[in-house]
Image (cartoon, rainbow, N blue to C red; front, top):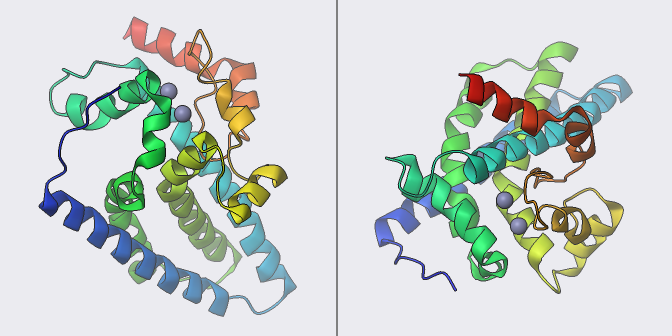
Length: 218
Ligand SMILES: [Zn+2]
Ligand SMILES: [Zn+2]
């Protein structure tokens, strides 16, 4: 059983505010994207960008998770207590995150994602198929990144909400069966935790061992 430190009120407020601001800006960008859809071609472009964004979020979730599980330790300066420790604690007590609140799970990720979302929402014009696709990829990647820890928690829950179970059955989000492979010895693969859809490809090309060999040489 991992004893968790008390979370200061200022941190909870910052994470909660970040999540609120991220949700508002995501809504604004989604509105701008929907306004740019004038026909079937734009709708298909946006649907394609949603798929690409969701898969990119899966790749990013895998890279961050691999780094948290593999590099440094809880005593590494700066990133050790805040970034590495939660990953190591999750392997000691995988069910602990089921009791974590939504703000605690996604607030800090929303804070990190917010500057990119704000910049794209305010600065990028969405006219033309390329800009529309790029705007869509940014929105759906950031949405995927921010909800990753929620999706991860649902994969550990015995009885997630009915809509979540439906998405798991469809295979759109990480399923308990997919994620269980990561929590089995030798604990060195299947790191993607948004959907796990690209994990088989990454395992086939040996991405995680390649990265470790690369870092070993550096
Ligand atoms: Zn892990
Ligand atoms: Zn897990």
